[in-house]
Length: 359
Image (cartoon, one colour):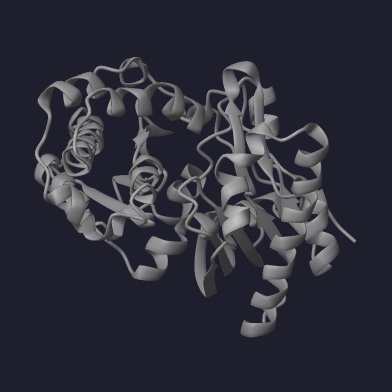
C-alpha cells in the first residue's frame, strides 16, 4: 500500500449538547501504519434556541419543519467551519461531519443525524462527507459506535479506550477483533438534571459528592435489561427518556442523593466491563476521554472500582478526540478504507459509510 497524507476537518456534536467541536488534523499512512497531528481545534457553543431544538425540539417537529432545520443547521455548521478556517489559516482536503443525532433506533432501521452535508459543502466549498451511520444500519448494524476504528489505528498503545460523553462507550481488542459498545448514559442524564437547577453541568462532581447512595435505586439501575445483553449494542435518548428518567424520579430523592447514586451506577458499569476482561500482564491501561474525563469525582469513583491504570491525556485530546476521529473517518473515506467495523456494530460486513458532497 502506497503512502497517503491528507488534511481533514472533523465536526462532532454530542448528545450532551456541550456544543460543536471542530478539529483539523493531518493524517499520514506510511508502511501501513497511521499517524496523526492535531493542527488546530476549537469548540463553538450553540445559541439557546438551537440547543433546545437539538435537545428535544426536533423530535416533535413536522416533516417540513424538520427538513428545514436539517438544512439551516447544516448551513450553521458550514459557517462555523468558515470562521474556523479563517481564524487558523487552514484549508483542508475534506470535511467529515457527524451531524447531531436526533433519532437512533437501529432495531427499526431508523436513525437520523441532522445537519445537511450538502449545506456544509455549499457554504465552505470543500468536499464534505456526512451521514456515516446509515449504510451500517441498513446492513443490520447498530450504526454505532464509529470511534473504534480510530482507537484501533491511532490509539493502539492502550488496552481500553473509554469515552465519557452523553453516554459512555468503550473499545478494546479481543481475539484479533475490535469490540466496542455503549456502556451506559452519563452526562446526558447528569446535565439534564443540572439544567433543572440552572446549571449546565455538575462541575467536578461537587453536587454528587455531597450525596449518599440509595442502594435500592442503584440495584434497580444496575438490573436493567440492557446491561445484561451482549454486544454489539448502543444506546439512544429514547431509552433514557422512557426508562431511566422515570426510574430516577420515582424514588423522590434529593438532587445530591440521586446524582450520587447515578454516578456510582455509571462508574460501576464501566468497572464491570473492564473487570470481566482480565489481561495477560495484569494491570492494563485505560485511556479516558470526553467531557467526563474532567469530572474529578466521577474519575475518582472509576479509579476506585477499576483494576486498571487510568490515563487522562492532554486537554486537547480529551476535548476533541471524537472530532479528531471523525476527521479520520473522512481520511479513511478518501483512502477507500472501511470506517465501520462489523465486529463493533453487528453489521453483516465492514463498510465505508458516508455520503460525499463535492463541488
